[in-house]
Image (spheres, helix red, strand yellow):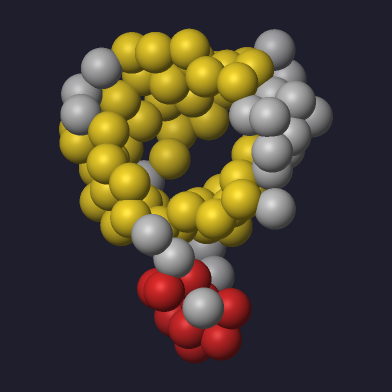
Length: 88
């Protein structure tokens, strides 16, 4: 169960309807998270370190991320995150 990160082109995001997805924000904090559904998200601003038993990644603006269902991880938000998100 690995976290997938891409940096897609703007037109790819528009075609997929990403900018119509809801927006969620996280303040600077550290918290545990469990994904019971696969989440797709696009980072608008901020950055965070995310650690699971499989990965240790840093996310930043422009990243398109897929968190697989069943993933347990720790978010360490370094600066306030704003993201578009959608669940499968």
